[in-house]
Amino acid sequence: MKVSTCLSAALLSAAAAKALDTVSAVGNKFFTSNGTQFFIKGVAYQLTEDDPLVDAEQCARDAALMKTLGTNAIRVYHVDPKSDHDKCMSVFDAAGIYTLIDLDTFDTYILPKTPYWNETQFARYAEVMDTFHKYNNVLGFFVGNEIIAQADHSLAAPYIKASARDLKAYRDAKGYRPIPIGYSAADIAELRPMLQDYLTCGGNSSEIVDFFGLNSYQWCDPSAYEQSGYINLQKQAKDFPVPIFFSETGCNQPGPRIFDDQVAVFGDKMVNDWSGSIIYEWIEEANEYGLISYGPKPDATATGADIKGGFSRAGTPTPVSPDFENLKAQWAKATPTGVASANYKADSVSTRACPASTEGGWLVDGNVALPTFGGGPVRPSATGSASGTAASPSSTNNPAPANREIAGMSAGLVGVMLFFTFWL
Ligand SMILES: *[C@@H]1O[C@H](CO)[C@@H](O)[C@H](O)[C@H]1NC(C)=O
Ligand SMILES: *[C@@H]1O[C@H](CO)[C@@H](O)[C@H](O)[C@H]1NC(C)=O
Ligand SMILES: *[C@@H]1O[C@H](CO)[C@@H](O)[C@H](O)[C@H]1NC(C)=O
Image (cartoon, rainbow, N blue to C red; front, side):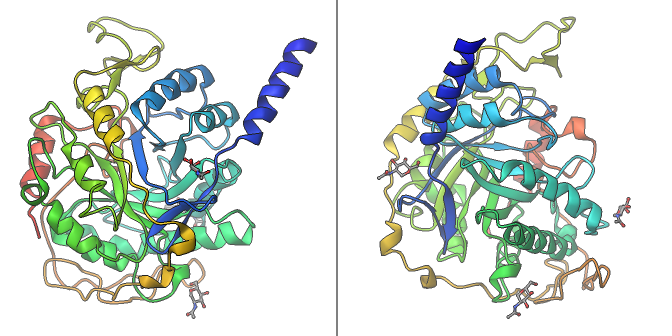
């Protein structure tokens, strides 16, 4: 119909005209193109294991409530590069919400125990970038999530670094804007800070990640800056070479969540070194991390297109109380301004030294040559074995896709994770 065509054309051009300012990484901060520092107040958003950015009406319902929560970013773990994302991306853009997109797909993860990085993986990651680079509200891409989930996985680190190097080179060769490309790490005490240092070491900015995300469930309310271990996270993040932020956080043991960690992250002690946090997660499911639910839990015999894993996965989002209101109140109080890009000197931070390997701990010795396609994989030599495990609710370490975000993690696994999280 003519009228509605005109109307949607008008709406589209209005949306285009008001597209969000792009964000880029400079030194250890994010800046919007208008010169203000950008701090992430994000939510993990994966309603099903499939692409959540294709249902425009659902995106609109969620974006509207996210806006009242004070959210300015979502993290999406899986997308289908062949689908149309225009409407969802524009709905989130209009709500002032940026997106962080994981590039990996269900069958192209870098594997922790038998890591490799080849053209097939590269092509699949690149396809996601090709689809999403055009949206102003893409804040960043992840090359992996918790690939290294226990201490003896550290030999996979050069493959993660190689993937970031190759996707950055691809982005630049294609003339895409400098969308930051980084990694999202499990919080493993034995490997922290070696992993974050390794991914930003060696002095060549083409070979390091553009940002580092940490999935940390250390702060379980009631807690505090020292007691939670955040004091140590802060020590290790001081003057970090690239932006660092919590790519998942929000421990729910024992609950309810007060989100006092947000006061710390956006407060005096951390705000100069951290770029915010992404709360795990939007939808309530078996792991009980949800900030909203789509109505009461269906009974065990209920079936329907939107019911999977025993939870409704579409509809009108209803806040989970009191977590939703608690987070909203904390974010409303946290309004850091940071530094203007004009007053910021990127060379006030520099790349880190490459860590040496240690017996039974970090197994990559120094600045090893990164794997390349042409020359074949370069396997760093092992110097020992290590134990310990720390998987978070979104761990990719279970190769079965259905187990990833849908089933999430049981309270028992959270306990295991916390047990192994010693403060370094
Ligand atoms: C700059 O952009 C950010 C993100 O779009 C926005 O929140 C902020 O209000 C803008 N600042 C100015 C001065 O335009
Ligand atoms: C990459 O490795 C995977 C797993 O071994 C394999 O299926 C795929 O064919 C490889 N791709 C190339 C281009 O060699
Ligand atoms: C930095 O790394 C890139 C990508 O690996 C490489 O092409 C370039 O030669 C390196 N630069 C220096 C100065 O080593």
